Amino acid sequence: MNSRRNFIRNTGTTIAGLSLLEMFPLELLASIRKKVSPNDKINIGLIGVRGQGFSDLKSLLKMSEVNLIGICDIDDNELTKRKNDLSKLNIANPVIYNDYRKMLENKDIDAVIIATPDHWHCLQLTDALSAGKHVYCEKPLGNSIAEVQVMLKAAERSGKAVQVNQWQRSEKHFKDAVAYVQSGKLGTIINTKTWMHNSSGILPVMPDAPVPAGVDYNRWLGPAKNRPFNVNRFHYEFRWFWDYAGGLMTDWGVHLIDIVLWAMNVNEPSSVSAVGGKRLFPNDARETPDYQSVVYDFGSFTNTWDHYIGISNGQYGRSHGIAFIGTNATLVVNRGGWEVIPEKDKDKPRIEAVPLNKLSDVGMDLHAQNFIEVLKSGKLDQLACPIQTAAKVAINAHMGNLAYRTGEKIYWDATKNKFNSEKANALIKPTYHNGFVFPKI
Image (tube, rainbow, N blue to C red; front, side):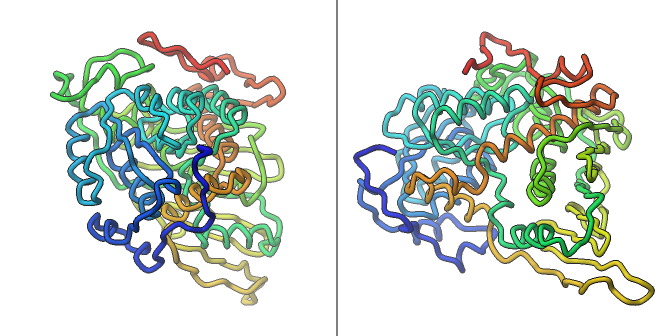
C-alpha cells in the first residue's frame, strides 16, 4: 500500500445484524459509514458498474475506510445510474472513466474491482497489477486456461493482493462442511457430485441491431472477435457465448466445484469427459449447452458436474449443490446450509445424522472484509480466495467445457501443460482481436 498510510488492523466498520440483510438499502449503508482520517483511507476504483460490480462495491463500502474515487464502464447509461446511486451514499463526484487504462493511471487508487465480462478479466487484471494496484476480481478468473495461467504468473510476480470473488469460501457453513468432510467421518469418499439446475427459459433469437446510444461497443468487444451488436450478447446474456464466457460451467461451476477441490485437497484431474448440448431449447440464441454432464477422474474418486437450463428440480431436492458420497454417509451442502445423511445397516445408521445447518452469515461481506484486512496487514496468505485457488477451479471448469466442445475424453499432462487431444490443445489459448495482444509475463 501507499507508504503515506498507516493502516490499523481491525478498524473496518462492520455491523453484524445489518450485514445479514440481503437487500441493503443505500441510505442505510450511508448511515453506518463513519468519518475516517485521509491517511487511513483505502482508495478504490470500480471497473464494470452493473449488477455484480455494484454488489461487490456495496460490500466493500460497509467498511468506512474504503473510499471510492473512480468508476469505469463502457455504457454511459449505467454510469449515470450508478452516479445517482452513489449520491445516496454521499459519494457525489467519483471520477468517471470509459477506458479502464485511464483509471489505472490514477496513482491515488490503491485497488480496483474488476467486474466485467469474463473475456476482459485477463487484460484488466494484468494491466492493474502492472500499474501497482491490488485487485478484487470477479469469477471466473479468466476465459481460458492460458489466460488463467498468465494471470496467476502476473499476480505472483507482482506481490499484490488478488482476491477472487468466490465468496462461498468466507461463509461459516461452507467452512464447517469442508471440515466435516476432512474429518473422515463420511468414510471412504469415492464420488462427489456438483450440479446447477437453472429455471430460466428460452433465450429468443434476436436480430443484430444498431449499437445503443451511450455504449462504446468496440471497447466492450475488446479482444473478442468483431461482431455486429446483438442484445443477446450484451450485458447479462454474454455468458452464453464462447467469445466472452463459458456458460453455466464457468458461471456456477467455479463456485461449486471449488468446494470439492477444497474439501478433497486435489488439483487438476487426470481425465475429463463430457456429454451435453442444446437439448432443451435447441433453437434458442445460446451457444453454450443447456444440458451438460461432465466426469472428472481424480484417481481415488470422481466428481460429476451436471447442469440444466429450464429444469429447476435438482438432486437431493436442491436446485444447486455439492454432495460428498462416502461409505458411512453423504454430506450435502449448498448456499442454504449443509447436512449429513447416514448410510444404514438394516435400520441402524452407520454414523449419527447431522440435521441441516443453515446459512448464518453473508459471504460477500465477509469476503470483502477479508480483502481489506489483508491490504492493511500485508499478509497475502490470509486471503480467503487467493488467485492460486481461483486459478485451480477455473482450469477445472474450462476442462469440462473443452471435453464437451471436442467430444473427446481428454487427458491432462501437467508437466507438459497440454492435453492428449489436438482439438483441446487448440482451445487452451484464445486468439485476441481488434489490436489487443495476449499478455506476456
